[in-house]
Length: 252
Image (spheres, rainbow, N blue to C red):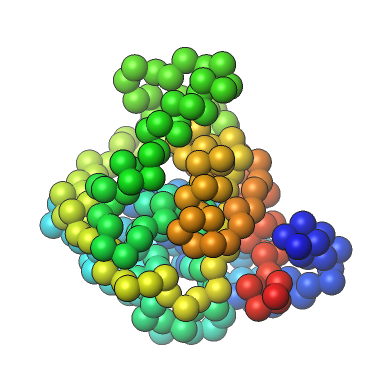
């Protein structure tokens, strides 16, 4: 069914030209800059775009502060809101989606929380470290003894973009509060949700995400090329996917 839907979208059977407001929520880095290659492409396709900056350098900022940053960035926009949540934003974007008239929530290489689970607990609860080690072993790679940001995140990002990112410097992110707070919703928000996963992600391997997403959301993982920072490495492909993804109601 998923392949059929994607085929129909590419062939024009779905109306993918309707104007939407894409709210782009970054991951742990917290900077809207993450979306700087995708945002203009969505604008070219006729959409409104809001790229959100998050309070990631504030150790006192918790889940409510992140959700407030998202809703504040949206302002009074209410036309076909589509929230796109990268990685850690899987913990925060659903909170905004629960309080706004969101048309779609698209999770991108994202963490999927359970009610009452903290972001600190998520790693052991899902078995992320073991899944990453297994992924490296199957690929015949040696897992670095020390975490290497370039190897894990930037392996498929163009050199000029990597150079720009390194020149900006790594933000002094602090998750003292964010990682300690239980996810407050009793259930996933009643918003059509899609999960888009880059199949070359070395941090959250696709086979790991299939298991977690199936078990926690009961929806399929839709795959595309690219690594964890797919908005930097494959902006054209990602913009096409975001522009062409139908809603859950369309696919029923």
